[in-house]
Length: 69
Image 1 (spheres, rainbow, N blue to C red):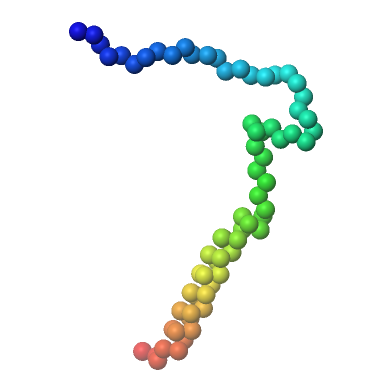
Image 2: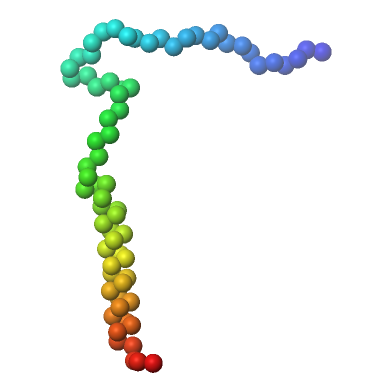
Protein backbone atom coordinates (compact mmCIF):
# COMPACT_ATOMS: atom_id res chain seq x y z
CA UNK A 1 0.00 0.00 0.00
CA UNK A 2 1.36 3.45 -0.89
CA UNK A 3 0.84 6.45 1.35
CA UNK A 4 -0.62 9.59 -0.14
CA UNK A 5 1.70 12.26 1.25
CA UNK A 6 1.62 15.90 0.15
CA UNK A 7 4.14 16.85 -2.49
CA UNK A 8 7.25 18.61 -1.30
CA UNK A 9 8.32 21.88 -2.83
CA UNK A 10 11.75 23.43 -2.60
CA UNK A 11 11.91 26.21 -0.03
CA UNK A 12 13.74 29.30 -1.23
CA UNK A 13 15.04 31.98 1.10
CA UNK A 14 13.67 35.49 0.85
CA UNK A 15 15.81 37.89 -1.10
CA UNK A 16 16.46 41.15 0.73
CA UNK A 17 17.80 44.01 -1.36
CA UNK A 18 20.06 46.00 0.94
CA UNK A 19 21.70 48.15 -1.67
CA UNK A 20 20.55 50.80 -4.03
CA UNK A 21 18.96 54.10 -3.24
CA UNK A 22 15.36 54.75 -4.17
CA UNK A 23 14.44 57.48 -6.58
CA UNK A 24 13.27 60.58 -4.66
CA UNK A 25 9.76 60.28 -6.15
CA UNK A 26 9.51 56.54 -5.47
CA UNK A 27 7.35 55.40 -2.55
CA UNK A 28 8.67 52.33 -0.78
CA UNK A 29 5.74 49.90 -0.35
CA UNK A 30 7.33 48.34 2.73
CA UNK A 31 7.47 51.68 4.56
CA UNK A 32 3.96 52.61 5.71
CA UNK A 33 3.28 56.03 7.11
CA UNK A 34 0.02 56.77 8.82
CA UNK A 35 -1.19 60.22 7.93
CA UNK A 36 -4.70 60.64 9.24
CA UNK A 37 -6.40 63.98 9.33
CA UNK A 38 -7.27 64.95 12.89
CA UNK A 39 -10.74 66.15 11.86
CA UNK A 40 -11.52 62.80 10.29
CA UNK A 41 -10.33 60.99 13.40
CA UNK A 42 -12.42 63.11 15.79
CA UNK A 43 -15.60 63.25 13.70
CA UNK A 44 -17.15 60.02 15.10
CA UNK A 45 -16.39 61.16 18.65
CA UNK A 46 -18.02 64.53 18.00
CA UNK A 47 -21.13 62.84 16.59
CA UNK A 48 -21.43 60.58 19.63
CA UNK A 49 -21.08 63.56 21.99
CA UNK A 50 -23.73 65.46 20.02
CA UNK A 51 -26.16 62.54 20.29
CA UNK A 52 -25.58 62.16 24.03
CA UNK A 53 -26.11 65.89 24.63
CA UNK A 54 -29.28 65.86 22.53
CA UNK A 55 -30.61 62.91 24.55
CA UNK A 56 -29.83 64.68 27.84
CA UNK A 57 -31.52 67.90 26.67
CA UNK A 58 -34.60 65.97 25.53
CA UNK A 59 -34.86 64.02 28.80
CA UNK A 60 -34.41 67.21 30.82
CA UNK A 61 -37.15 68.94 28.85
CA UNK A 62 -39.63 66.10 29.33
CA UNK A 63 -38.79 65.74 33.03
CA UNK A 64 -39.15 69.49 33.60
CA UNK A 65 -42.52 69.57 31.83
CA UNK A 66 -43.92 66.60 33.77
CA UNK A 67 -46.49 67.44 36.43
CA UNK A 68 -45.14 67.28 39.98
CA UNK A 69 -45.77 64.05 41.77
